[in-house]
Amino acid sequence: MFATTQWSVVLTAGRGDIPQAQDALEKLCRTYWYPLYAYVRRRGYSPADAEDLTQEFFAWLLERKWLGKADPQRGRFRSFLLTSISNFLANEWDKARTQKRGGGKVISLERDEAENRLTWQPLSYCIPESSFTPEQSFEWRWALTLLDQVMGRLSVEFEQEGKKELFDALKPCLLGESSTQPYATLATKLGMTEGAIKVTVHRLRQRYRQLLREEIAGTVAAPEEVEEELRYLFAVLTRR
Image (cartoon, rainbow, N blue to C red; front, side, top):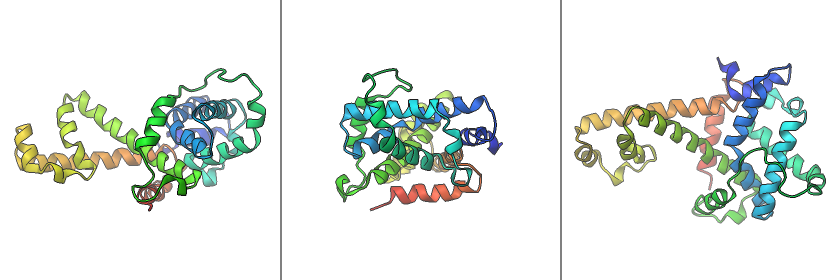
């Protein structure tokens, strides 16, 4: 089953013809374009140029024989993207910028949304972003995007079960903010016992961890890399 995860399909396609690989790559790119945009902005490009660069990069990535460049031995999608866009900026942008600006869009990018996220997602509350490298900026935004994906999936699950209000009330417990609303307060608000709240939060956290592992598994090449990538993720989020 692991061999059918998104990035595993892409890597396998490098060794053969797998029709699903292109769709898998496009889906991954649509999900994780924001960290790339942040990386380009941190390299000193304006918002407009960063949008064009990111679009050109995706066109370059999807149209060329990129599969042969993906190393299964270092097969994290995060690493592949960062290496690829670094090479693109160094070698390909000079060619691409001679083309008409704002050409065909490969993936829908929301520049205004990205700029807003750059404003309210600082790399650290203690250290200014200017002291971080473009690579560190990419990794931070990668981690946040991954966590957003997990939270989004969990929210959809609760909404499909008709429990959106419950999820919205308990969401702070996943973010380490349960002290702002003690379980007793939540129980009164939701018409549940405090014991039932504790059990629900426990199950919510279990499901969150499961979905987090699934999301990470979709971006690495082998199951043994999931735990390592998970540790790296938290190292990035706690970096000071």
